[in-house]
Length: 67
Picture (cartoon, rainbow, N blue to C red):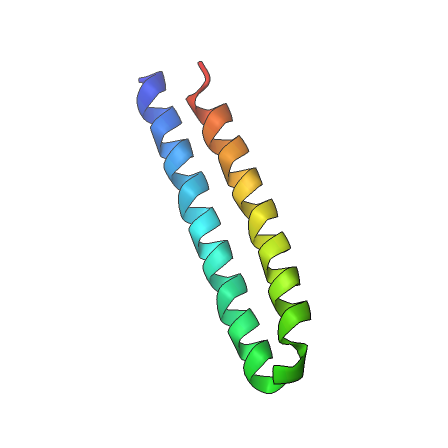
């Protein structure tokens, strides 16, 4: 029973990260479309935020798979 609950937790962490990174990418594209001259700043900020979200998701997966 504990194994199935941890798999659900890992799945939720991955789904949440996917949604978060997708939203960041979409909003970055909106920002670049509105201000093309700020593409470098927007890209840098987007990559840092995506890396932080991915790190939190990986932490959530590791914690949920630990018994």
